[in-house]
Length: 231
Image (cartoon, rainbow, N blue to C red; front, side):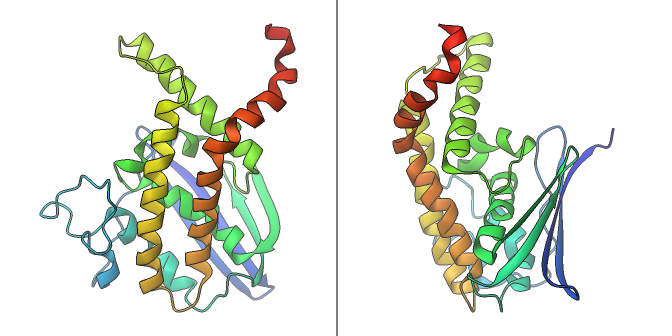
């Protein structure tokens, strides 16, 4: 088995207009290497609209690791409007997904992978879902995956002797921090984007993240009937 976990995104605007991106992650820690950017733009500086929860040292990280890995994506979609139509094909090791949608929806899952896998401490807790990447997830799917990820994390903490949280408190805290990060990061992308595709893709992620904690109780109540065999 390869040491890298790869996820391919292809955006097809017409028969002769495609944009392709390959995400290669270290299989052991789900991190992607920092991109080699010869002259990093100012919006990648760590202190440029720095996220409130950021714990990175400016001396060690002069550029935000997420921003530096987004440079090529932002540049490729500079001329795209969020409502432009596109056919997106996502190829993982296990299967292929295809969806006809607008650019902002097509960019959101790729943006999410990069933000979670670039070494940002705030996004670290969402990284397990990257291994089981599900592009174009609905709110219900996102809620189910996020909550089960959190509970499995608590199981591993308990197994290793740590203090666990079987309530929603820690879960809500994670998404609060992610929401704060997305708000700050939108200011970066606003400075970077000539048009609005990349920015609105982030807004989509932010909205889904904001809705997830509040929607969880209702979604859990709705799904309880599927777990009747466990009662």
